[in-house]
Length: 136
Image (cartoon, rainbow, N blue to C red):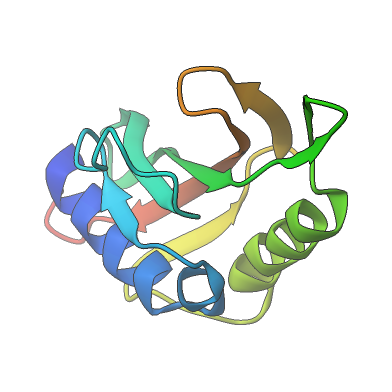
């Protein structure tokens, strides 16, 4: 049985090594590790929920922070950049990438929202995982 911390650490390593992790201008962080003053294009991920059984299942959430376009003193979504990052998210899971013992897929479509605290747009993504626990 894996702990949420172990699952999160594995997903962190997977995302950081992926084309998505390499395409961002900033860094990949685990929950509560992103510097509060960062305005870089960063990814923050965390284990959100899980069910323990012989096949552990659950959700790992990713927030991808992107800079806004400013037009007429209004922050607008950079649709081209957000679209490119969403595509990399899908490709990361659909491109045949594997993590030993895990089956990974998307859990719903990414959603883009504005975060007034960081003054950035956030692409909220969810990874659904299954992990075959041979020691159960």
